[in-house]
Amino acid sequence: MTLSEIIESFKVSVIQIATQQSTGTGFYLNEYNLIITNHHVIKGNGDVTIKGKTFPKQFTKVVFYDSKYDIAFLMPPHEIQFPEIKLGDYKQLRDGDDILAIGHPYGLNYSSTQGVISRVDRVQNGLNYIQIDAAINPGNSGGPLVNMTGEVVGVNTFIIRGGDNLGFALPANYLREALDQYLPLNGTSVVRCHSCSTLVHEGNIDGEYCPNCGTKIELIAYKDKNVETTGIAKTIEDILEKLGKDKELARSSTNNWEVKEGSATIKISYNPDSYFVVGDAYLCQLPKQEIGKVYEYLLRENYHMKSMLFSVSQQDIILTSLTYDMDMTAQSGEKMLKELMTKADYYDNLLIEQFGCLPKLEES
Image (cartoon, rainbow, N blue to C red):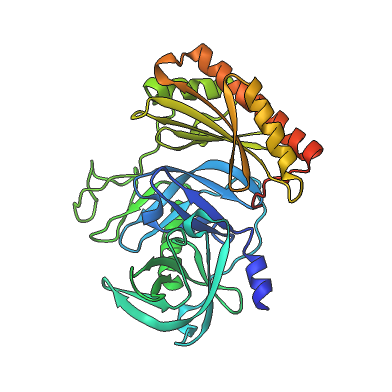
């Protein structure tokens, strides 16, 4: 396989993973029907969001985690066809072999970096790791390390901060061992005991303790979908539900939400320190020519509008609506956000069709 063919073959199988605490990467293995990632990517979460090239952002469950080897398994989305991805043989690797590190660094959609294996068997924390010089960054964690035949030979796991391209990947033999041990329990929520390596689940746990060595074990905790937010955050999420949006998927972090309306992206934020609820609709981008006509139109619209305002940030045209938190009720908030979403889609289309503005680029 050529380098470009290898990169292309992984585009569907490499998946973005996000929690309210972090973002990372995962990859799907057909042989086991599981998504693989690092434990530290999903730590403390039983439910995470995933997004891939062939499926939209959605929730999935964590079904296995192992803090010692820093690996976790997630359930894949239903009815999605993935290309065949195979695990390679770690024992065949040699210092100096060419490799690819694939992932989503800093949340950027799909990035690959080429490098070589600096050392096949670098020992860290009592485990062998593959040391690589390919650039990996926060967000790459959990992504595949791939050899030049297109096989996964490791899981990109950590870097040494301040080092010059000092990256480390968990060898595929550790991963295959964990997968083979988990396979008879596939679909069950399992935690590997960090003391004796026993697989612990609801069927064998001794109260709160490992049935083999007695170490206290915390089984995977899933979200209670009935847990409600409070105050302004609850009001906003109630409104989003009334407007047909999924509040769980919309929530990007505490007091921040993001939804799509037509071709526009709406970002909603609440800052308790400033007491304002702000809705920013990111529309199209300024055209390459006759920008003055666009500015004139936006200024005229600003003069007539009472509750919204156009602004420009670099090339992005943004339609903003804000309200003081003490003035925001369920009724007024619904009116505000509904109007913002409706106007955002309207203006986005108008600016593109009548003024030659450029559609905002989004990664597929």
